[in-house]
Image (tube, rainbow, N blue to C red):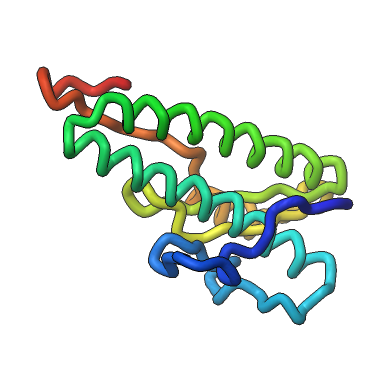
Length: 145
């Protein structure tokens, strides 16, 4: 199992308000090298990247910056592809990464064993949703990209 995402907490310009928690707790530190901690760190890093790009998109939208908006959308698509590749990799291990959203931002990532789910885990899953990006056009205020 390989995880390509680097921990953004070690990078200059890190924005902690965009970094999701993991299973409702702070993301595991780099010193924790057990498989679950590594998976959660990778998932949090992937969703942090998406959060950061969504914030950039919303800023471009507020500023009516069409070239910034298009660039952000392109980067979001690429980040989603990387996130999906990561999720597929873990799915083969019997694990599912579930994002929990608050508005447009992923605020928590959960890790669920898909091979041995029980009723409690299924109920908890109801709190987690796939990423949806609602954006209104500054000209007509109609939803859409």
